[in-house]
Length: 385
Image (cartoon, rainbow, N blue to C red; front, side, top):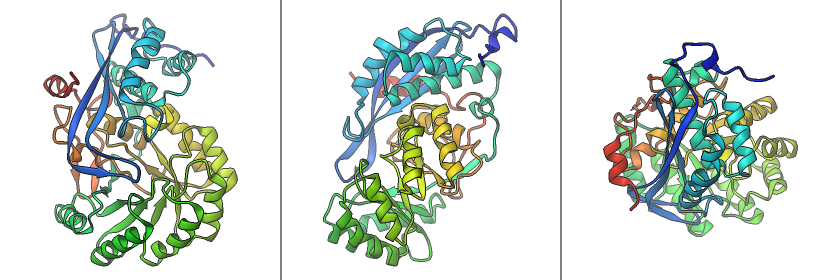
């Protein structure tokens, strides 16, 4: 069925054709080092998209990476080049409210490049929502929840520092679930660290572990029972993304739920994981799936198969986090909450009014579109070069 542009249904002043698309690379320092199995960062890089309509409304979107093209093939440099050279020219003059058609145009102009496409699609939802005076969540079908439980990631590698950090988050009622990044040290050192964290936080917080693909199956078989005994409630991507069969073998023997992350980019990937019986939970992320619509597609496959849903992040600012919340707000279930703590780990956010964190939840912004407004001074301050 062809989409009917909203611009033909309303007043002529609602000209929703795309007039321009501008991209800017920004680098925002973090309050502490964020250490994963294969990299560590002290500043987070984004591409900020500003998409202007013929009616004068500008929508914003964000693409995040982590340490360059180490997590996936895209970097902020390649994202900007792809947007400027291929995606923007393919969309200029098109009707912004035909978002499915815009998605098809982008797919025809460039393969994958999911972060770049996700940033533009976020800006489309923002611009159309602002024009119509409704939220992106309403454009996607409506709101089921206006807040989501939100966890904090412990990623310094120093258990004493991490315990102090966790205590601060608990006492301020910001977070009571913590995801611990492991894999940068030896498995023995990681298990010692996890024993200490589990002992100190026992009964007061839930712990999730993310191995970031650092283990082989033998190591995972040795460590997963230890984590289960410690009461760890979820383990994310313990083995490399290509080893879906290995994930299935581990899941058959593990006493702790396993979450698929790097092995699920597309709905087709999700279907492969389901068929293999390789996961209990899937992590959803706009930059991974290529937009709000594709994120819902992946969620639909997972839900149909009975998998739990978890809102993943890539240390997004309030712009990227708000886009995710617009999707999460309309999902039928989101049993595992989300990890969109990104705005709190930055030394400065990119919006005029950051997202609200309170009572262990992150709250859906109430404004139209994504619900947040780009701060031009912050954009200028953190813009590269």
